[in-house]
Structure formats: structure tokens, C-alpha cells
Image (cartoon, rainbow, N blue to C red):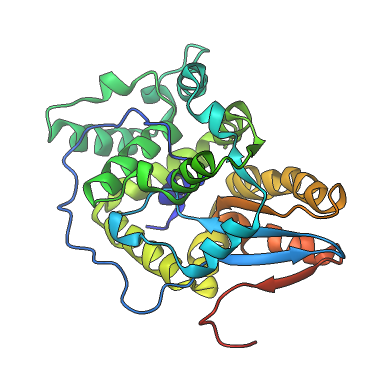
Length: 314
């Protein structure tokens, strides 16, 4: 199994609780935080008079992921404002859940059992029946929403919580500090990207997950440890490259197209201000490789440097 289903969970700003497809989850083995130095996925992008910090987030974290590295604290203190994937005010708006539910459910008469291959449907039904559930309860849901709900359920069983995610933490911190915070896209934009993934790729990801759900536990732990270590190469190989190779259209919609939409907005923070700095907090996937914000802004001629006190000099 690959990481695509897990990546869908990590690609959403997870402050909104999703309906979880209840099933017997793999036993949550102890997954202690990675030992050693915690290194942030943090870059500073500068022009002649101000800077933007790019911080790679993990949307679900554990209590022992705090306190944050000193580099993140310094970037937060230096920034006059913050940008998240979605404006914090929209994340908590009552209508946001209705928007999500609209995209997660079919509106054209289709049902889950009419779009999934029978073998995949049977595996899903067996998994759900093990805990007293059934596919019938999920019939209105699209495959990506089912995958997402299951994965978030597993990660929460492992001790990861959306309210501890880096985004949520920094949103709360910005509010307390009186720092303005905005968003790079709307909930509608985000859900539309998820919903537009081809059904074949959605079904394929769900089927591979159902073949070995226990692997998702190890994969999530491995990604978390790589994020804590600031291991760009491991994250790039296990997150970005695999997704791009195996589900290219989903990758384009979830990552590349959104990054392309975000670059001009991030760039405005450099070109329209002569002094104020901005901390931009997005999922780690969006900073990786040639399709990521880091390299896209570097290609525009800005000075880009990694902010990492304990990283080896290049």
C-alpha cells in the first residue's frame, strides 16, 4: 500500500471534524515521537526589504510535539501577520461544515456501491461489519470521503489530534498576540480539489488501504517522525513523489494546482510591503520538490534560505 490515502488526510486543514467511518481500527501500537533534535520545515524567502517565512505543517499532532523549535518561535515573533491554507475565521464558521458535506456526498443519484468495484466494496463491508457497521450507512459518500474518514479515525486512535495540529496551534497563538491572519483559499476551493479527483484514483487508493489497514499506522508514524526530523528527502520521496507517480491527476489537483494559485498571493506579501514580514503555514507537502512553494519562489529570483539551527550547512 502507498501513502495516498494518508496524504488526503494530511492535505486537508484538519480543524473541521469529519464524519468517521467507524470500523475496528488496527491496534494503536505505541508510536513514540522520534528521538533526537526536532528540526522545522522552515524557509525564509526575501526580497530587498522584507521576508516571508514558509513553514511546513503537520495538520494532526500529539501533545509531545510541543513546545515548538526555537526557529519557529523566532519566525512567529518576527512576522507581523500570518497566512494559512484557509482563513481561521472560515475554519470555525458554521456554514463550513455544510460546504464540506455538500462535496463529500453524491448529488447525481450515484452511490458508493455503484462506483466502487465489487471486490473493494466487499472488503469495505467486511471491515465495517467487524464493528457493527455497514456500507449502507456510507452509500451517499464519495470514496475519497470514506478514505479520509477512516484514516482520520485511525490517526486519532494513535493519539494524533487536529486540535493539536500546527495550524490550529499557530492560529490560536496569532489570535492571542493580536496578529492578523488570512487564508490562501476558501473551504470551497479546498473541497473542490478533493472532490475533483478521478473516481478511478479514489477507488484505487481506498482498495489499497483496505488491503492492509495496519500499514497506515506505520506510515503515519514514519511521516510524523520524518516531519519532526525535518527530513526533506524522506518526506519528498514518501509523500510527493509517490503520489505524483501513482495518482498523477489527484496530485495535480491536491498539490500542484493549489500551489500555483498560492504563489502570487505569497509573492504579494513581498512586493506590496516594504517592511512587514509574513509567516505562511501550509501542509508540508506544499513545500516539497520542484512543484513546491519553496522552489517556485526561488525560481522567481527571491533569496531563499532554510531556517534550521541544527541542520548541516549545504
